[in-house]
Image (cartoon, rainbow, N blue to C red):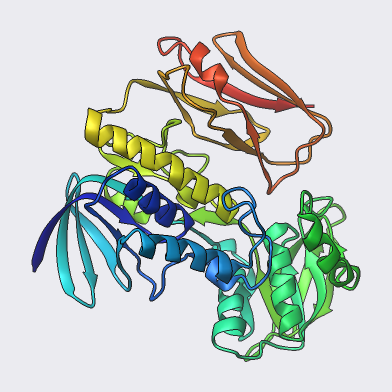
Length: 417
């Protein structure tokens, strides 16, 4: 078994991992290694053959493959060492990982580890949808791979489970495959297609007009044995069921972080995001281990993940050069209306540091919405928003973190109407 040492080990070559590697090179760190389990770097954007990527970090609209290729090209220009088809299978020490790939088994010891393993959609089995295991059932990612990479036909009539932004990606992929969408099904009273970039709105207007959204509904069962023949949906308000004929079902959204490696390494996890607990510098509760991107809380846009990669690079550089270890923290706890908050640890901060947003998502529609952050009965921050929509994240400034008393207990993060 090969043994090697490196200053920084980055696990995952999606937008967050590549952005962190490029930024670390800019900061002067030369000894770093990026591992990617897929055959190509770039992450999930490689499968999304539509525009809408790169606004926040590259300041221009790109297709998913074009966006991924731009970050890969940046990494090559900076001579980042990248090993694809290489999977980290376990930890053999606090900052030592065991990886397997074309070069065989490697034990890699690092001074700092960045976890950027991303997230995945829950498949049909994890959502406990009844019915037989028929052909024609996909997640958004498997559908995109099937259509764009394997060039296979998926069916003639589809039902999309979900009505959020990623559901639009499935809608456009099905349109390319010449598969008509019979309906989008959501358990919410409205769709969640808010805040879409203007060019995408025009491109999607006709598709959405022809694809009705079934609100307040859930998939009760999938009908069909060898191939999907129909889905039965149930109205959450009346309890009535109806059948929609189709030969394809696409489960979208309902993201979960790929957190298995973090858990195996003993990294403290957050019960709301289901990813590692991190402070504003994206330091985890395990010394020398950092986390960034969609591992933190399920799916954000690729450019948000990339900006977190740029941010965490500065934290890693400070840790390596100045022994900038994690300081005492208190938890940031969401109330009943808030699905998750990230970062979810408040630590001592330097008031002079640049703005780093605190992002959150809600469980249901709130119009209008008041964001309130308090600790021990003291209000630290309030901000009014016109509306908050589920399956969408929002950002608030982080200057209130300077007011947190680390001895006063958890910080409560609430959203009220």
